[in-house]
Length: 215
Image 1 (cartoon, one colour):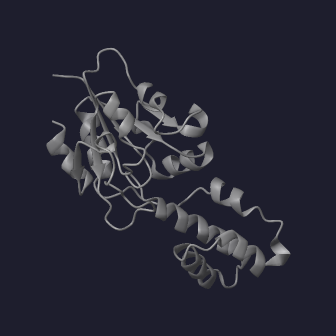
Image 2: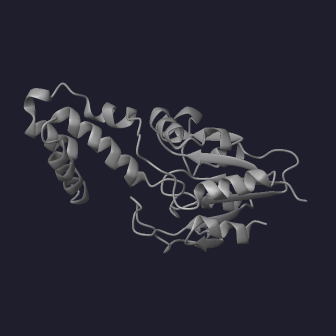
């Protein structure tokens, strides 16, 4: 049996980044207006979707609370209501039980990404986790992917969602790249109108389809 290393992206692959945003906004809304936080939370999401600066609008609306560091609240938020995407836990356990190595490579701040991983309860699923802030470089830097290379591994797979930065480096390394297609919840749009070198080798609609691609 060939040894495999299966590496995942985090945001909009294993968990929807929008779920984290909604959870963090709810915490902030409760801090800014404990009496009317549900209405404020709805307004914040509306501002976000209409591409307004949510934090600037909050500061204008609640000037007496301008000492609250909204950005730090957002970054340090420990969510209690985020969940793995459909099929994620099943696929992680399936590959773990097959004896394959599992990795995670994600861009973002250490505290934010570690809090997501902790809330999801998946830290012990991975042999290695690389987060851009603590590693010192962001995707598509080749180092973020090359760090997973090790003796005895014959096949590498990378599952992610953003063609603009996710697949070009693992393609260079000869990995099998797989894109989870946007079902409408992704924060960033998917653009496949790119040079071939940026594109994934396969596309899937659900994570459970990986079983058919990685045997």
